[in-house]
Image 1 (cartoon, rainbow, N blue to C red):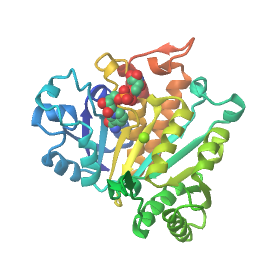
Image 2: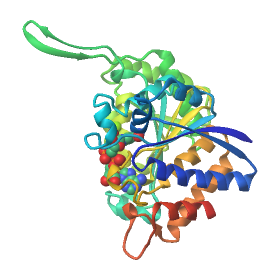
Image 3: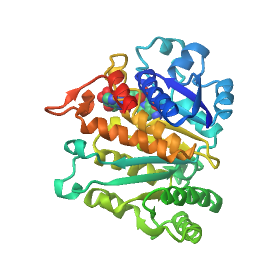
Image 4: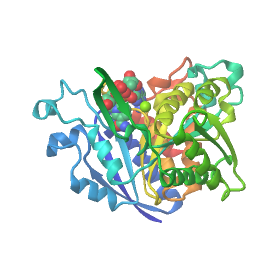
Length: 359
Ligand code: NAI
Ligand code: MG
């Protein structure tokens, strides 16, 4: 297959980790007979530097013409970088909000799983994580509390702030369909998380999710209240396959799940629209403290590239090949500094990428 990939290296460690992910994608292309064509665009601090804005309309057009976008990370140390002096009010992160909006990316996917070799980094008790866990959090990204009407005003002489949490049935249906589709590629279980004992928006959420579930008879559906879910994530994370939830609950639960898995440098993510198109990036940021030192862990970006193959290109066996290569490299004892432990072999970003590509 021929696929066009728009590449956003971004800031900080972004260029280093993306270079390693492309190394691995090229190895996959060679082994499985595909052709990937890469086009770079600027976003974030580097775009402010070069173009005066965090993301140009031309760059958006390039991304729209591709089959998927691979992103490293954006964001710099604003007060000391040279572009800060040029444009102190422009935030690199504004590029990310703009591209999500322009591409209609309403579904955010964040896996949280535990690798046997990295169990030492997991903060949970060893009896709880016996046998590991492997979940996928599907968070609605463009609705709910973060996008509702908000205001702060005096009411009867008292300063009062209002945020609005609103979802319509179409917004819920499209994310629910994504959640069930993903579950069909996994262990076929969906846990829909809401607060239906209190919120109207959650009662609509539950109703629409139940309707969508009828089209997926093979998938087991359960409903869980968000406070209970926050507990269950640390009490028994094994029970989860796909967690399907709205914007704010997903924001909080996905950070909790990331913490539970213990290794930020290993966590991939994807943002999808209602076509096969998606934007794939590691969950971590631009790590300015280690940028340019060949210290970054490229595995989260490499695993994001694997998600791109699986979810945008339907290349399941190619994605499995990457996931298995990562597991093999860990099993052989290779570690970047962030996941290093006693007796293991410490390698840099470049070597880690090469090891995965070879395997
Ligand atoms: P961060 O994730 O960049 O770094 C947190 C800590 O984890 C640092 O000590 C860093 O060295 C380490 N770390 C992160 N990724 C690593 C990797 N791949 N390998 C080894 N160590 C790694 O978060 P922080 O420091 O809060 O933010 C730094 C910048 O990144 C900020 O400008 C922030 O806005 C931006 N950011 C961008 C995101 C994105 O592009 N989607 C997401 C989160 C933050
Ligand atoms: Mg968050």
